Image (cartoon, rainbow, N blue to C red; front, side):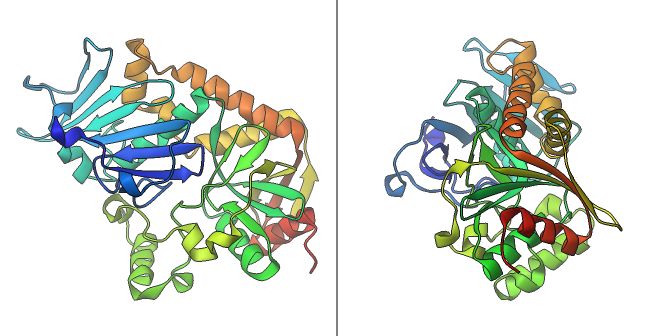
Length: 346
């Protein structure tokens, strides 16, 4: 169908991963805000995810509750009724390096809405991106990361631990380079930047009145994120494309936790691996995604069990090659720990 023709593309991980689509934006997909016309895009990448909005995701049969089916070409369809006349439809065609997910226009328009275990399109695209990466020996990390001289540090921590503030302070005030403040990529040895990730920064630090209003509402109103869509400001816009760090081996990992009193210790490989995995799985939902599990059930390409094992392997490699630290305290303490490890002068 003509509506399924790929017209737009972007590279959320330069020279490694691209996302292609027939629409210029994927609502609430955190890795990149806007896709460019194909003829204006950069060179192709080894890995690519196709995101297509099309009525062809829907079946012609009436729905009586949630429905799963496998089609002749080994693609998997998930449909969930949302009214007597409306449905959320996903058609997944999985390939090792160039998978395609087709969603119907209703599901695309609902953006961040999650119904049952049918995740929002932004989460779906993010988690399919991670499975694609894991199938090829890479992993997305829910982490921040910085480079200063010859040191590369990855900061794991749950939301509101201070990862973003640490990145912004050390880049703006101390000359560090950044890989990302929320999502970065690794193969277990080297770190790769995600420079177009949406920057979820304090309203007072953002550009213009519009951004300040958006962020104030996003942080202050319950469920606002369910309708707000993609963050309108990327980390490279905030910190400057010239401050993106180059691909380099990881030297240090810090698992951060907020606490009233501060302490810091070096930890062994097993403990670091377990904590990194626990941190990552608070963010990524592919292991509980209905469409991913259905694809595994129908033996149609995705192997969630293998993806989980690949994540374990990547994390273990990362812990094995880096110095691993565990730190707890307030924002100021955790930022000072990061500065000390990077050997940034006061």
